[in-house]
Image (cartoon, rainbow, N blue to C red; front, side, top):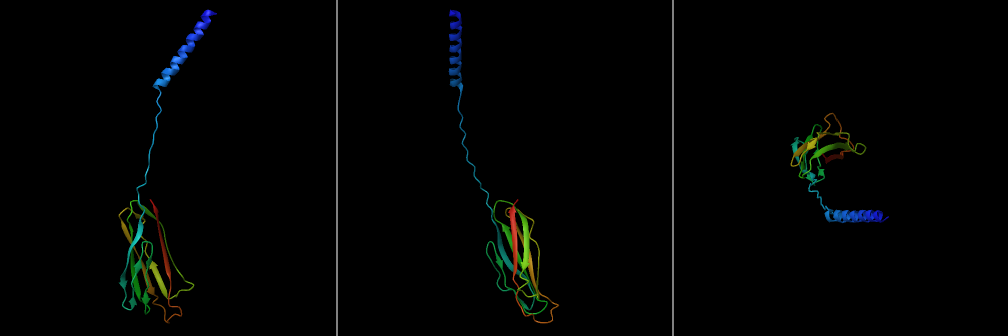
Length: 163
């Protein structure tokens, strides 16, 4: 029995020494980190100008903000036409893809004598790039009477998303 107690005591001492040895060589590691987004989204309208104005038309003074472009075309006779060029730029650091470009006219309250056509801006607009598209407003040359309604509102929405 004395040998048995001696062996148990020796085993307990070995276990305690191993636990102290493990503690002496164990190290707790702490990792801290910070992440920061430095990209900037800045796709905007940079300008609008009348690119072409027929003899009987008046392009007015086109205006724009970073998100809107406005023009007031005056067409005096059938066949008059004005072409507006709108510039969009990517002044940010994130590349952009064209998701949609839709143009609609208020046909219910607008003159059927006023027609319009548009081109599409670039599908991809990389950082620092610009693109242009046009809106052409015209007085239908096939109209033979001055229409009762003489105005039409055209709305375009250009939507770019992250590439």
